[in-house]
Length: 130
Image (tube, rainbow, N blue to C red; front, side, top):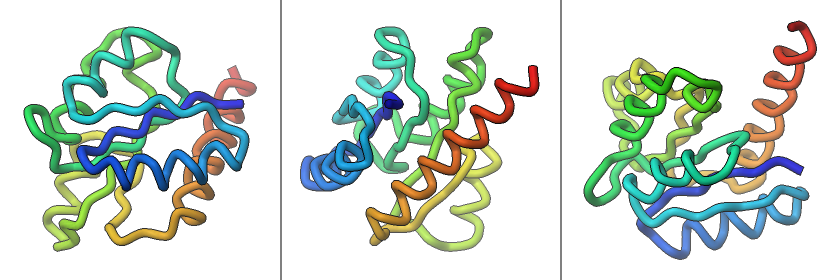
């Protein structure tokens, strides 16, 4: 079972994503904004983070930037950014920030769970190679 952070300022989005991730056997930690998301990294070991781009206070992009500056393994946590912003330059900005994937809203919850599971498999393969 992996521990997945779901950070979105919309409670319904967090709830839907959480339902699908829990059905897939994952533990889910929720955050309502970027500050809560960043704080979660200091509280538990997270295997993947799913973050909305537009959140109050700190955006998902701000959180990814801060995360990538962390010196320990926390800074390498795979991140999926979610956003209704789908213009090519917006997607590119998210990926250039250090996010591993960028998914556009509306999204398929099943596809999101598939992306999480793929990231976990990739990460497991990287750890096995060491």
